[in-house]
Structures are given as C-alpha cells and as structure tokens.
Amino acid sequence: MKKVPDTPIINEAFNIVKAALSDNIFNHSMRTYLYANEFAINRKSVYSEEELLLVALFHDIGFYAPYQIKGKPFQIGSSNSLKEFLLTYKQIKPERINAMMEAIDYHFQFRPSWDKGEIVGLLQVGAHLDVMGTKVKSIEKDKRHQILKEYPKNYFFFEFNSCLIKSFTNFDSVRGLINPEHCCGTNHYLNLNL
Image 1 (cartoon, rainbow, N blue to C red):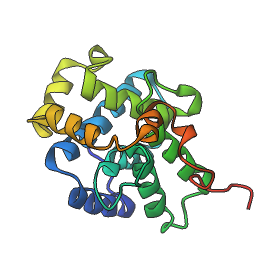
Image 2: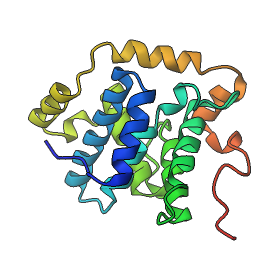
Image 3: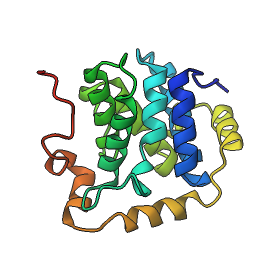
C-alpha cells in the first residue's frame, strides 16, 4: 500500500484530525485518500498528494465540535477548519487554499466536479467509493482489501449516517450539501484580489 506523504503540515494535520474524529470517521478519511490516490494513478492524474491527503483528512471534521458552524452544512465547517489550519502556513498560496476548500465543499455532489480541479474530483471519487461503492471496480480488488485491512470499516456506515442526520439543523444545512454556494457566505473563501 502507498505510503502517505510525510511532511510537517501533514503530521500536524494528523494530530488535529486524530484528536477530533472518531476511529471510524478517521478510517473513512484514510480510505477516501487511498482510494482517490489509486484512482488518480489509474487515471494518470496530475495532482498534489499532500493536498489530496489534507482534504481527505479534513473533509468530515465539520461533524464535530468545535469545527461545526451552526446552521451550515457540515462540509462548510470542514473546509473552514482546513482554511484556518492552512493560513498558519504562509507558503501555501491563497488560490490553493480555496481549491482545497472547494474540494471539501463540493465532495457531496452526485457526480465528480472535475471542472473545479483534480483535487475536487478525486476527493469526490474517494469518498463516494468508500461510502457507496461508486467506481469500486476502478481499484484492484487486492488493493481494496489491503486498504480495508489497514483501515477497517467496522460500524462506519451507521456512525456516518448518524453524524449526517445530526448535522441537519435547518434547511440550509440540508440544501448546502448539494448547493454549498448558497450557504457558505461571501467571506468563506479567501479574497484573491488583495
């Protein structure tokens, strides 16, 4: 199985995410990354493994306090948490932060949003493959089994659906899953015109 990137930013992200997520949701985040990475290799995608791992690690952190944003869909809290974390690293360009935020904001779409960039499409594929089995045949059976052995599902499906239902606090928190642009606010993304 492919080794994950070992950089200071990734190590710090692991510390934050492991402290926030349950084991089942953390394992889902890792499976999401590994499936997306395998899909990318087969697709011959050009992408940043570090960015893919960051979005996979943070994509469900918005289920948990203190990363939730009241009245917003969970993925908006997740992408905002990633933004706040990445702003401490001055070497990451604002447009890359926005691209990673979009990957998280749009990962719940029905179809991969490749038009928004490779990281967006790859996160969607990895998460959907893990949750719903979409595109499962695109990953070799042996590799899927290795990933599941390393990061087992256990009661993931029950826990994930429980977190999802609890995140539905108002109409916007439901509508925003499919149309995040309607509820993320004008200052959600970084202003690139400064």
